[in-house]
Image (tube, rainbow, N blue to C red; front, top):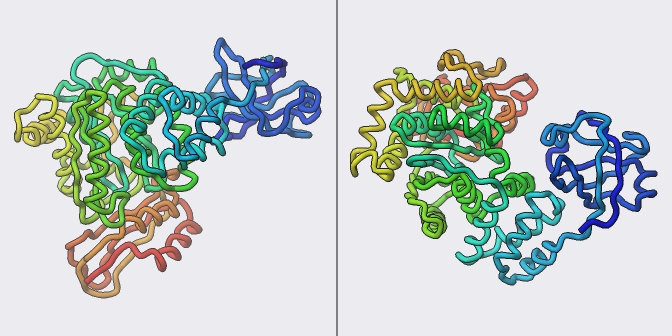
Length: 499
């Protein structure tokens, strides 16, 4: 694989490349060495090989220097003026496997593994990854191909194992609110079940679970730190887990630019992480709503079959819970608003969102019965006992503290963005429908999930009466400019429909 090696001294650039691991080399050095923009290099660092891509510059770095972007420098603890060794490497053999897949041919496990390994190590550039995504996730795949894909994704990263009963819940997303994880995890953990919850960030929604929990505690940790958190509390609520399934993070980076996700992509992503985390009992939450990600019961059943087939092959006891929802679950949409709803449920406040509480208890009950902690039909009762008694809240505070947050946080201490607007209705009526897709779109215009306090609070929900001049929802954002953009967008993307 190695052809030519050379050395350059580092200059850390205070910019995050985000999508790819890129290094910047002076144009004269590129000519001297015989490399060009877009070429793959192998960076040898601290006993490991890191694949990077070249960008040329005339002025950003001097001859003899290599520019290292901030995210790469942070990831591998690279400082200024370090002498780094690079190798020019040959074209990845996995490209031939991608070409074969593009032609509609089936891949062996060895070929699938080569692609996933090169995605994880960043030997493949974004264009090659995009071709793989298009050929593998947006064409019909056999059960064997999906099995190969999940297995390769799990095996090209690090794996974790925890003692005792290890369970998890995962929602495929797509329904605004529905933030059951911060309620469910402490309920399950307070029953003595290990639940190392890895969460996702939002791609097209107003907030992923990781975005939500990050408003009150850090969610990014090394594997060693994560193990300590789980050992201490029996649980965690984190984004990813270090080098667990690194290929998935890369695939998401590329796929998110198109804001679409196929069923096989969702299944492979979720199941690979559960396998790598050593999960043995799993409940999958599939919300169905006509303006959500899964729009019909038929689509939900197709997903259920895919999940159960993969779970069977990896011997994970799994139940898929399909929830036909008429509207978003909860009232707060956006990171801070959603964690505020969760805390209200955990604190058993009078104004807590009862639909959110109900769904969290249903999912927790399934896990408790699946693991044998509760008899059939008794799971919800046990989950409710842990919630009402305050044991779940106590465990929640333990998790927050272990992850570096303030355990004394309460629902009334959650900060929302300073610019707000009450959207009132001009006449009497009853809420007939809430457009889930439009709700997410408007939240993102307001700044969610990147602005934690941004989002929408639903003052009224489906079936509730509205009097003339009533506030039906409240917008929160960081600036008047964003508010004006959102109000303008509401003219073509209405959230509410009233009778």
